[in-house]
Amino acid sequence: MMERILPHPILSAVLALVWVLLINDFSVGSIVMGVLVGLVVAKLTSIYWPERPRLHDPLVALEFLVVVIWDIVVSNVIVAYLVLFRRGDTLQSRFVTVPLELTSPEAITVLAGTITLTPGTVSADLSADKRALLVHCLETADPEGTVERIKQRYERRLKRIFE
Amino acid sequence: MAFWIELIIAALIVIGALFLFVGSLALARLPDTMRRLHGPTKATTLGIGAMLIASMLFFLAAKGNPSVAEILISLFLFLTAPVSAHFVSKAHMLRSSAVRAQLSPTGRAVDWATFEAEPKEAGPGGAKEAGSINEPERA
Image 1: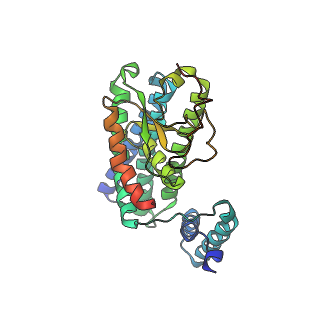
Image 2: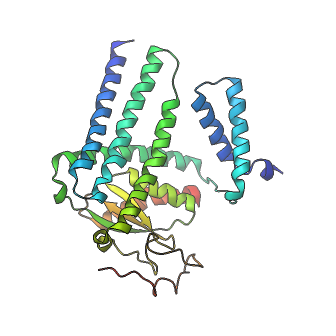
Image 3: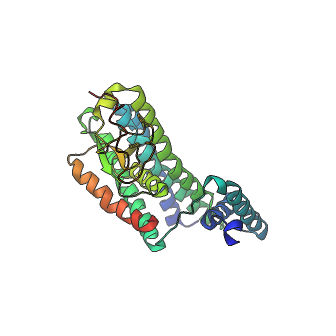
């Protein structure tokens, strides 16, 4: 019964919150409207998204968020330095392959997005069987170290959050 | 508005503008498409982020009521920047045979998804027969 009315409780909550933030007004009217939007949209789209991804460890998710925001700040400084003070063609750019332990599509999506937003790496492609990520590094002297850092810093936490 | 708040807001705007400028400069300075992607995906997220924090602080200090639309702007930016970068790089890999030669191997029996469809029975340990026949030739 609960499943039928509320197929994706987190999605509904996020939609309601986004609605209220978009209106930029915390009145009862906009909150009620936001909750309605959250319920109706989640219900209407539930056939396209039959599985319910679970957040196992919200505390780790919070930790992950802090780590990622910190890394975004650091990566911006590094990339800005490389762009301003290095000739582009002297940068040791290369592709590396990150073998994935994650299996859920949501976790892989978050990991790929995180890789793109953090130090000197852009995720470029996924292997056809979804078990490896292709990552482009702007400047790396140590490809194995980069892969190891991605796995240690992000994948390990995502595995605890999603799987 | 207190002087020190103005100072913080001004500093955030300058920092934001600096990073936005560097991000755009990266597009012009770096030599190839894959390297150019690094500029707009990173430098601009912090640039916009700093600007938005400045905007929130300003409305909080000047009008007294916090404006939260900025949180949404940064949320949407964080969602869309990686996706567009991903698609630009996929399109680039399809168009350029030079970049295809630089790709690192998947370490799997199958190729990257841009060049090969998902094997019929994917899964851990699956994908045994796929890939070997129609592996695209790479230099």
